Image (cartoon, one colour):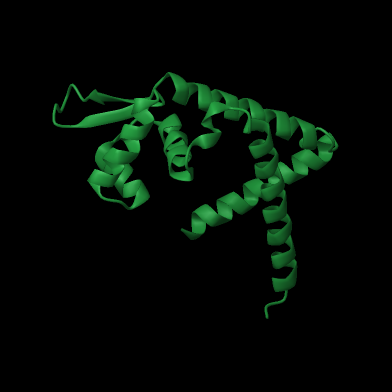
Length: 148
């Protein structure tokens, strides 16, 4: 076992526990919301579409599924106004999927809940601790990017 392997595992375990606690709290906050009935794949798609519209092929690739399965995933969300399809005006054979009214609402609520949780917990740390945490996470991020 390497010199700091135990320490690395303890850090990972704490990070995982914190992530799980935050996820559980978000789940409790959304339990009365309509989108609580959406599947994990549907929620993941809404998260991806929040970043940018995707083509059906990009959705199929992201979920490692067939184009037909991707179309079914989109169809269910489209029926409930979470997403909509638009023809790409530059390539009329290509269809873009983007967030519709309920999809935008979902992402807005998720952002609000995340900010609530971050303020609730990070707000209890001293400013110096937050700066140190940000610096350490930034260093770790840059190491990971360089190693790719």
